[in-house]
Length: 273
Image 1 (tube, rainbow, N blue to C red):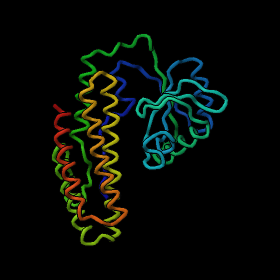
Image 2 (cartoon, rainbow, N blue to C red):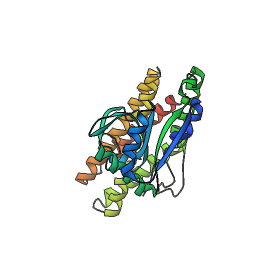
Image 3 (tube, rainbow, N blue to C red):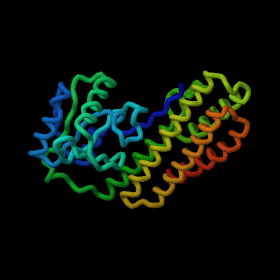
Image 4 (cartoon, rainbow, N blue to C red):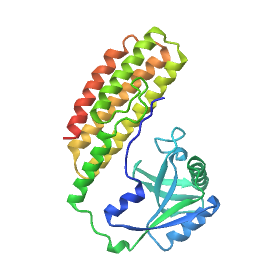
């Protein structure tokens, strides 16, 4: 099945760019993580916890995709941790049971022996983020978004494509798939491939939504609007394919989605200007 990858720096690695020195606490037993988190919060105002977004009820990955994810823990009460999740724009609480499930899930998925907590050292000495650094980071994000668009398993092409070549190729592949489904609309193998494309297109849509939020936070509203438009275009394609998937009628799909693919390419080019 085709897969979709996005190449971002790992969260801990990118902190060097912020001139932030970190201290990692590794704990083998999941049941001890909560006590260590509470104890650490009494000595530091910054604490981050590594877990699996598959078990986070508020996340886009909930019960769909396993992924290593970091949340900021800002406090706790008798039943829950109080958290801020900058990626998913969530501020609220996770019950102790939800936290433990997400920790165990990551250990099983990544086959890790330990759970990681992270806190900052020498926080008062950290440098402020300069405008130059922010613009450099935007350029890095654009490369990650636009040069690593689709991963290693384009089904029909048997070849990896990146950047705008991938935009063209995914359009070709989906059209090829639809042509075959028009001829054999009940083919389970083809429907399974279509299901994969649905998941991947939603993943791309979500990446544009989150990137748009990031651009808005740093004041680039025009670029943020482009991302929101892209998110909407990808979701429309996904919904068109989803409807066809359930009713097994594909005759009118190509015309509808190809207009969206062409619009997406124009918007992606504007985003990378």
